[in-house]
Length: 188
Image 1 (cartoon, rainbow, N blue to C red):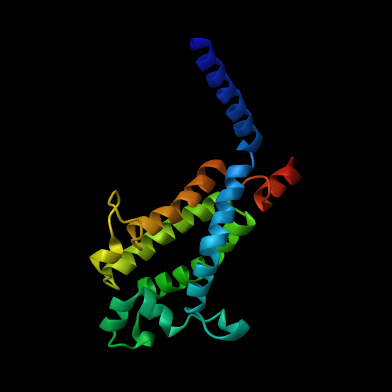
Image 2 (image 1 turned 120 degrees about the horizontal axis):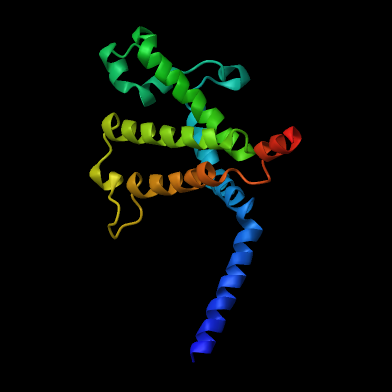
């Protein structure tokens, strides 16, 4: 009986060591970037589009809606007049947040400066979460809790799942099918 267990254990180890070696250099980063692109890229793109003007040139102007979404307390303090909101720090935060929401997801999807972009997206998600809880004052049922029996809270559950592929990209890189890998190959 011991020899059968040893045989199966050895077979298991050899097969999965081979699978791990086969996909280690390229597969995890690719899967993480694919998951991000399939689930979150369009979400962030649509959210970013609500923060800029209309048309192609509208991309270069941050809309008043961006201030309401990101810096509502500053808009309220200015009596609802977005133009009266000071650029530093609020205007800078709104501009950086708006363009980060366009640029960081694109960098992750194409695999350019992926680790830095993924780290930036984790920071973006943290700020987004802070704004959702403190500014938009979403309810406790939407915040949820980890390790409860409900896997559908918008904050605790979903945002954790958003961060996991980003953490994989930070740790393992974007994989061989990326602009980062191409640039590394060209430099060699």
